[in-house]
Every structure is written in structure tokens, then in C-alpha cells.
Amino acid sequence: MERKELLYTGKAKKMYATNQETVLLAEYLNQVTSLNGAKKEKIEGKGELNNQITGLIFNYLAEKEIASHYIQEVSKTEQLIKKVEMIPLEVVVRNTSAGSFAKRFSMEEGIDLPFPIIEFYYKNDKLDDPFINDSHVKMLNVAKDEDVIEIKKQALEINAALVEMFRKIAIRLIDFKIEFGKTADGKIILADEISPDTCRLWDMNTKKHLDKDLYRRDLGDVIPVYVEVLQRLKNM
Ligand code: ADP
Ligand code: TMP
Image (tube, rainbow, N blue to C red; front, side, top):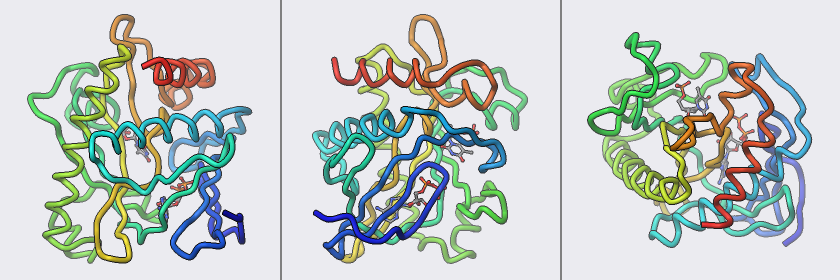
């Protein structure tokens, strides 16, 4: 597979065309951002960590019969993915109170929720990715009612598989963000990435943050904890 023209530069990845129409190449960048890009830093080594972590997680999900866009890793920082039409939603699943949820409900962080909570954010940088509900999704033509049902179903299945996977490596999956896309034949599949950039991961015993909250909250260096997550996944 040959890397062709650069199609898009995002906050965490560059997307390239390939010599195959239906396949893209995602290059994971050494960049960390928060506040929708307002806070940004170059961090050596981060791209290869998230490329590998995402690959291992998507492979694990495939074993559990959860389809995604992931094809294969092609270099330390690059992976091939199926090209999809992205649905402009950030789908957040929460198992435990934290972050914006804890703030919204004036709740302490770390309280287990009675059932997984699914939230939608409209992926729109100009609007700062606002929190929206099913009616807004329909009104904005982001997705049809039946697509929303399918997205929620898959989000819960992905959550169940990830909770189990992280439990095996002594990590508590607090919450995470995923994105979905539509294939040419109209199937909705998991796309983008799943990494410590997009999940809150707490060590089960020490409650240590093993994720991007270290950067968001100026608590320390992300690289050693991303290395730790990768090592635990490799040893699973
Ligand atoms: P952002 O756009 O939020 O800065 P990234 O830097 O991660 O995020 O850029 C990757 C972009 O590629 C995202 O906008 C994401 O929605 C999109 N994307 C992810 N997977 C696919 C895919 N399989 N096909 C097409 N686009 C994708
Ligand atoms: P939040 O508590 O800030 O709303 O974040 C919920 C989860 O979603 C958390 O695991 C971080 C992840 N997330 C992203 O991956 N990208 C984003 O832009 C935001 C706001 C959250």
C-alpha cells in the first residue's frame, strides 16, 4: 500500500489517501492538545504510543466481533484504516463520574454510575463541540433515528468489551469518547481512535491517572503512563 496525498491535518493525526480508493493511512502525531486545541504541545513519542495502543484495542474488539475501521499497522506511527463517511458526533460513554459530567452535576469524581451513560457532542470546532441530545442530532441531520439507535447499541457493546479488557490489566475504565462512520454500503462502524487521549483510565489499585488528564490538568508527563498502558495491553 502506498501513501499518497495528505487529505487532512487534525489535532492528533494526519490522514493520507492511499493507492486504494477505500483505504486511508492515519499518521499519529507527536502532539497533545486540550480545550479543543487552545492548549497544545509537542510530545516526542506520543504518536507511536497511540498508534500501537489503538491498534491493539481495535484488534481486541475485532476478536469480540466488534467491527471497526482498523486494518493494520504499517509503521510505528501509521496505520491503514477503511475510509468511511464520518458521523460528526463525539459519543461519550461514562461508567464513573468524572470530568465535565462531575462538574455538570456538581458530583465528586470517582462515583460509579448505576448504568453506563451515553452522551452526544456535535463535532464542530466553530461551535466548540456542544453537548446535544437525540432531537438535536435529528434536527441537524447528523444521523437518522435508526442510526442513533444503532450507535447507542454499538457504544454499549464497545463499553462492555472495553471494561472487561481494561479490568484484565487492572485498569478502571471511567469514561471514553468514540466516533463512528458509515461505509460505502451504509454500515455504521467504529472509527477514529481509542487511546489514553480519548479515555479516562485509572489504575484499579492506586487510582493513578493513566490518561490525558495528566496533561489537561497539568499533573505530569503523559509519556510514562502511556508506555505503561501499552505494556499492560501487550502483556494481557
Ligand atoms: P480532529 O479532527 O478532532 O483534530 P484527529 O487529529 O484525530 O482529530 O483527526 C482525525 C480525523 O479523521 C478526525 O476528524 C476523524 O473524525 C477523522 N477520521 C477518523 N477515522 C476516519 C475514517 N476511517 N475515515 C475518514 N475519516 C476518519
Ligand atoms: P469530558 O468529561 O471532558 O466530557 O470527557 C469525557 C471523555 O471523553 C473523556 O474520556 C475524554 C474524552 N474526550 C475526548 O476524547 N475528546 C474531547 O474533545 C472531549 C471533550 C472528551
